[in-house]
Length: 106
Image 1 (cartoon, rainbow, N blue to C red):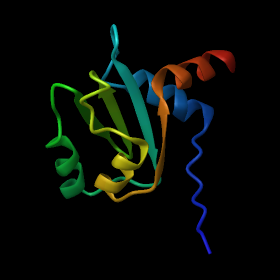
Image 2 (image 1 turned 180 degrees about the vertical axis):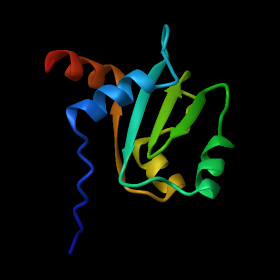
Image 3 (image 1 turned 60 degrees about the vertical axis):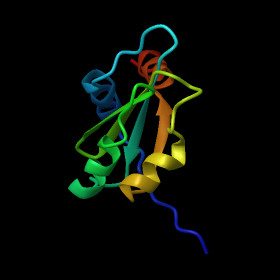
């Protein structure tokens, strides 16, 4: 039996997530946001931040994780990667897609 966890934020929360994001991708970079079910503990956040590299950057604000992938070939990032390192279920979306959705439903 599987468990379903509801982590769907409100429209206002999504707008806040987009506007508070620490990364603005340029060129070939891609930014993502992981909307988590709960705030991860400090030990797991520190583990994620220790993996920052030339290819990837990470930031955790409250119960949301932001990812900047600079180099697709060298990146360690995947959707399951964030959930596994932080030990929190969540959903990861491309920041550009989330921004487009907020614009569409203004």
